[in-house]
Length: 236
Image (cartoon, rainbow, N blue to C red; front, side, top):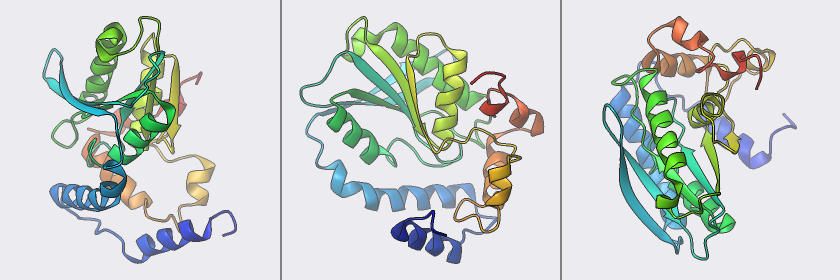
């Protein structure tokens, strides 16, 4: 397919030839994801020269861990809150630490990575509520996180984290911008492009998407909620 870079195509073909079992256990996939990302992240993670601080944000129901990346010569006029991908079931801030600390470094901006709770232990809307509570807290207490009172606050995320970011942009006031990285904006999978690339759909197959949604959501009504399938909102 000429739309693919050759290196990208080789990687996608590797995943297609080595598919994950459809009945894979949650914990097995979590360990696999953490292991593969650790190998990818290790080299670049060690090049970050700013400060990395672990904190928790207390909500009505729990305490949510966050990781704050503050680069050298930081710009105090912006702050980005990041939500990792992983189908709302796997991965963590550790799996995306390379992209977060690298982007914080090159933009000279504080990035905060959020460890929201995951399904199937905590199904929708719990993980979205975690993200909402943390984001609202940071917006209201931005100076405590190293930026100015008038600093712009943005949300960002990849895949499932992109969906969370897009949803928060609809739900919360005070978000100034969003950065969506291949965001999952239609969990129903009924768009023309979804059907066009269903066969072959490299790596993230319809079967794997169903596995994720089964573990992350209670039922089809959850998936039809515009807070989850954000493209169902009348305005975007």
